[in-house]
Length: 123
Image 1 (cartoon, rainbow, N blue to C red):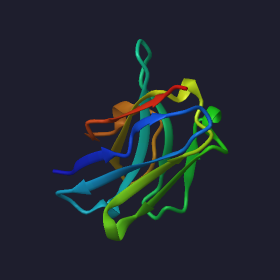
Image 2 (image 1 turned 135 degrees about the horizontal axis):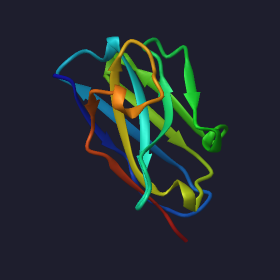
Image 3 (image 1 turned 180 degrees about the vertical axis):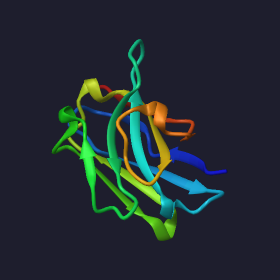
Image 4 (image 1 turned 90 degrees about the vertical axis):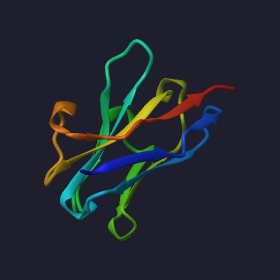
């Protein structure tokens, strides 16, 4: 069973930065694509970014392109989400999720989820 634990969230001023981490245990991360999703109060969970098994392919939600960067270190069983130029609308609980092989857009296709880490953007 693959277990995922997110960390790195916090309270940041608009324009600030955070680096979220997603650490995997239980199974090797080498065979899983990893997605980051977020859910703001009263809104549906949405996909933010995804990274392929090798790290060679990444994709991003349009509204975060150029500000967010996803990366992975399989040797450390960790996936990162670097968040720059934070905006109030980025505030949400951020989740990482894993699925075998390739990234898919639907959150329903990710069988493994972490518990989430809160990102708050406020001056």
